[in-house]
Length: 295
Image (cartoon, rainbow, N blue to C red; front, top):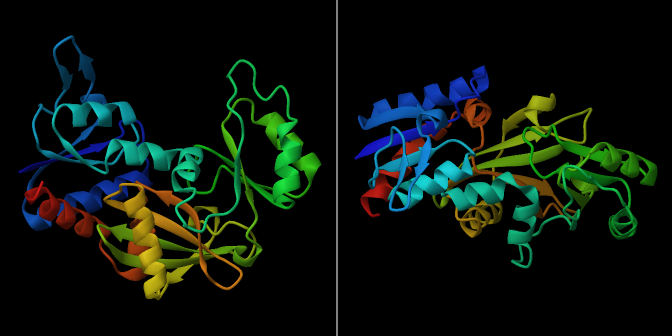
């Protein structure tokens, strides 16, 4: 077995380099043949009778797909490869509006969510009458999220209708969703690292100055002792989305019951490893070796 690891050519920040180093160490630990390539090494070529993906030859080698280049993921799957995570699951997690639709009606506690209607890049939200329904349904303060975003940077709180109108006016044509504010979880949440059917680590994140608890936004962290129900909650969400591994962010409801915030298919695990002493890269590589032997 040869493991291909796909990362993004254009995300070469220290944060991503740390992840790559961890993956290299884990692969070396297990003594497997592996190669790290970027999506620019894997240009998709489509012809009438074949599809190819550059440096990765067609075949059934496993691919650790640490990218969000969904078209490349689909092409690799079409050429015979098993992706960890599958391209469809990554696409759903990357788009918060798709994730909300996918999880609705499955008895998974999520905040009440309203998805903004689709608009076009050259038009934007020219008519915002739908905001009245969102405001009447969700009330204020209201959480507004861009469909695509990471590290809490594209998550906002609107305290009244004026702020909501101003925010949506500035959004242009960016896809948005609106959510009820979970008061009981202000400034604190839990990140669960899920690999396969297990929670391998849990980290409590908290902020004294922001409604978001993300470490990137200045939040702090400490290990979290998860209960069995919380672990089942995180694993069940991962399975519903078709993921092999992920980071599940959990809010606290009125009676401390778990409420889903969001799921990250390509969750940055350096913080949770440093906080809990876990080795997420090793857990993921071990899972791929075990799972692919049965594939």
